[in-house]
Amino acid sequence: MPRKCSVCVHPKQGLIDKAIVAGESYRDIAGRYGLSRSAVERHANGHLPTTLVEAEEAKEAVRAGDLLNEVNSLKDRALTILDTAEKAEDWRTALGCIKEARGSIELLAKMIVALQTSAEVDVLRSPEWLELRQRIITALQPYPEAKEALVRALDERN
Ligand SMILES: [Zn+2]
Image (tube, rainbow, N blue to C red; front, side, top):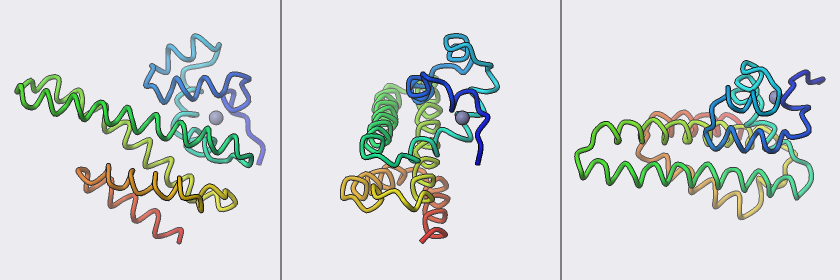
């Protein structure tokens, strides 16, 4: 399956993926790496979850785990700020946090599905992954719709 994505073949693909995960704007990322905004967006939506887990080498699998952790900690931070904002009845900040957390959770869900589909990846049987998967499913508890979609996607593959 040949790939024509200018991000996937970019020598700095790892850094670009990190910038996307960190929530930088597609326009900024595109500008910095000489890419088109639409290429970055297409890559972020279609390839990032898969490229993160297509790894065949252990090193790459660790990198996928790192990124999962990174997304997870971004989500945790957004939810912590949300707690504080809710207590202060600062609804504007609270709404912003919900939006941030939702973005992270959506990416997590996509990554889990991509991990689940790449059958050859041994990482799926590793205790670290099983623990991480459980943590992510737990993290999705307050989001019944996202959790249902995820559980359905996982079931279909088992
Ligand atoms: Zn791509």
